Amino acid sequence: MKTLTVSVVTPDGPILEDAYEMVSCKAESGELGVMPGHIPMVAPLSISAVRLKGKGQSDRIAVSGGFLEVRPDKVTILAQSAERPSDIDIDRARKAKERAEQRMADKQSDIDMRRAELSLKRAINRLDVHDNNF
Ligand code: ATP
Image (cartoon, rainbow, N blue to C red):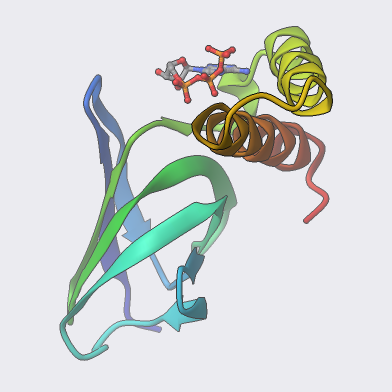
């Protein structure tokens, strides 16, 4: 089975670079599975889990939106933020979720509501990736 190099980069620096057989992620247009030899493309990513299937191991990463760039032998994920399950601070994500829910319940302006919704999505995504349920 061929592999492709997957590189995950955030404004804080590189998070991961390794060889995998398949990348599954959620583009804004829907679920996407990328294997070696895929046609080149660029797509915006949702706040979601990126799943990486390797020879021995599989990995998953919580990403908070960004872009996916596909070339036949390489996938680059440029994310606003990206965390491996072991790097996710559960307490922080739970608190972020509560704050966002509270702000949404307070029914603030449309802009604040949208920000709270995105914050809630990021928190739920982190909790899901940590617990491996998505
Ligand atoms: P918070 O309100 O807790 O800051 P947030 O969703 O606003 O959450 P982001 O702006 O998405 O946070 O991320 C800022 C930085 O903090 C990024 O480097 C991100 O990886 C990190 N980060 C945010 N939440 C967590 C978490 N629960 N566990 C680990 N790292 C986190």
